[in-house]
Structure formats: structure tokens, C-alpha cells
Amino acid sequence: MLEKDYIMRLIRQFFEALEKLIEKREKGNETTLQMETNGMYRGYFHQPQEFFYEASMDIILAYMQARFPEEERLQRIELLAELMHFDASLKSSEETQTALEQKALELLNFADTHSDTFSFGRRQKMKEIEDFLKP
Image 1 (spheres, rainbow, N blue to C red):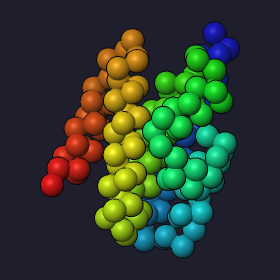
Image 2: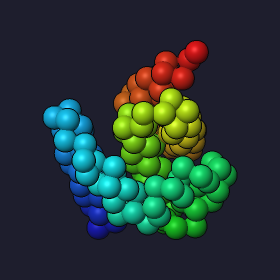
Image 3: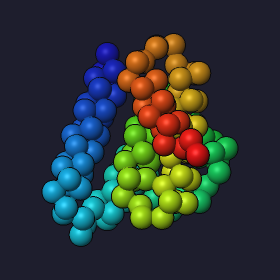
Image 4: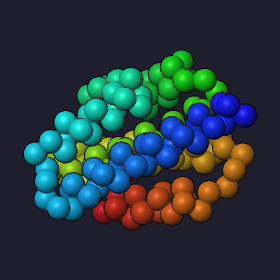
């Protein structure tokens, strides 16, 4: 029970922090936005954003498996996908946007195939990213 409470609190805190970043982006307050996004990578996933930019999906998934307990791993993978999806929206380079969106989609696909819970939200996000990636 305590573990489930911890995971729910973690998810709530993550989305509250992400919502604040989205508000800053919408208000045009982008001076510290990338720094704060990097802080979320470090705070929730214990690696700088460059690790997730440069690592292959195999390495990212192996890291997530080694770093986080099984009970919270899929949730963390979904949170990472959300953060990468948001981070992609901050990038001016189409190449970087595409690379981050592809990784986010792969993470969501992984979560979708390994989760025992169906999520309309996850499927909607996957469709949104797939539409972005279509040429």
C-alpha cells in the first residue's frame, strides 16, 4: 500500500511540475525552461537529458530496468515518454524534435505492450506522436 501511494505521489508531482513548465512555455518565459526540463530529467530519472538524447532505446530501457524497481518501472517509463514529448516541443531543430518524439513513442509502445492496464490516454498520446512523425 505504501509503495502504491509513493508511485501515485510521484506521478502527481511529476505532472504538476510538467504543467508548470507548459505554462511557462505558453507565456513565452523560456529563459530557464530548458534548464528546468534538464532538472526534471535529473530529478525523476537520475540522469542528465544528454544521456536520454544520446543513448539508444536498448540502453535507456536497460538503464530503467537496472535503476528502478519493477513496481514503478512502467510508470517511470511513461513519465520519461511524457517528458521527452514535452522536451521535443522546445526544440527548434526538426531533427532533434523527431528523434525525441521517436524515443517517446517507443517508450509508450513498450509501456503499452508490457502493462496489464489499458490506457486511452497512452493510446491517444501515441496517436498524436505518430501523426507528428508522419512525413
